[in-house]
Image (cartoon, rainbow, N blue to C red):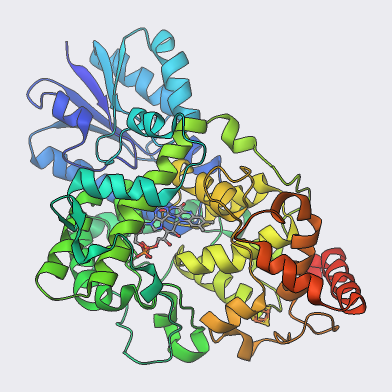
Length: 520
Ligand code: FAD
Ligand code: SF4
């Protein structure tokens, strides 16, 4: 009897652990576009199109490699619209002896598989660890156990030692683990930003784009975002082209401008990408593996194509941050998802969905999000995220938003980034201090403020930048939690140095902003 290998939408990797364990001569693979998985969160339409098209291309690739593949398209008349039902029908119809899969990226689904699926299917379930990641979940838990504080930097050093990336024996190449201090520049047009990459579209892409346009991109469907221009790679070959393009044209300047933001008025569409890789959707769905991407960056440094700070900064994001947040997710779920250490209770303002706000920095970040299913890290963390943090938005609401709007969003990576890194709602488990900042940070790193109706230089006037007063309000309302944090003490000292009338005027302006949050 054949075994059934279930391949999920984020497992599009030929070397996947479960594929290695199955036999193409004998076993059967199943890929399914399931309505339940596309609608339980209102995903951005480009994300749905990217995943369906990449799945269909991957199924073709597997067939060419000799596998028997059953593919259930969303619009098939007999599509069951629930993953378990699709699997059940296939197991029964094909007389399969066992279900084989690789651990999935979401606690909800993995928990259901572990606890309910086998009994309902009537066949055993074999789940393989996802070894596309560099740190296995059990290894992370061992690393975390017994530590008073978890800090990414120490974890990252272990990952450098484990992979040997940018290592010279047991020492980091260049004598330093981290070159972040070189990576903080604003962009003032010093070097040209490369144009976005476009791929030609084949019949599979076109079918999927039509399907998504009809099923999800209609206004009544409430899936956010524009479907066109659709620029994502949908095959491994295209994703490799995207990697090569990044290494050649963007990586040399990646580190330096990693924290920079530019508005569309200044740079057109190129403002939306700057020198970022846009590789996260491919790494997360399996078209590229994290290790091959890091090796390409390392090789570019050894060949003298890019500075060490750029290669190191990029590799740190992947073997450091990416692996670290995943470790936290699996070690602390399911309780992690409901944490709200600051007891936030404010609803998410409507402009997170409509994009209509007078705050120019926010409207630019919403625009790129809806246009591209993408915003780069500093836009997510220090603009839309920072605002939600300062305004005290309910963590679960802002997490749902981040999960819906980005092409790279999966629970394991979105949740710790949003709830932990950005909202500090895990009480400091992931990071030692909240990434809170006033408008002056945004003014320093971007050109947004020059196009804004608010004044970034003041905090207590009717037209003052909302970030400024909300920043102080945030610090004062959470004084008990943060005043003793050595990395935040200076901020509290600055506040204490202000005249009391000034303090009161700032807090009054912040209260006004909070009461009128929807109108900002
Ligand atoms: P680059 O800037 O080119 O970075 C290179 C790579 O490093 C990325 O492709 C990504 O694989 C990895 N990386 C960088 N930072 C992180 C990080 N903090 N966590 C995980 N990987 C990282 N990333 C996701 O992949 N999915 C998400 O759902 C997601 N949600 C986020 C939510 C918030 C609130 C924040 C602050 C960050 C989130 N990130 C998420 C991390 C990061 O913003 C994106 O990985 C990055 O913007 C993707 O764009 P890029 O490929 O151009 O990245
Ligand atoms: Fe954003 Fe404030 Fe600058 Fe306006 S003034 S763009 S709201 S930081």
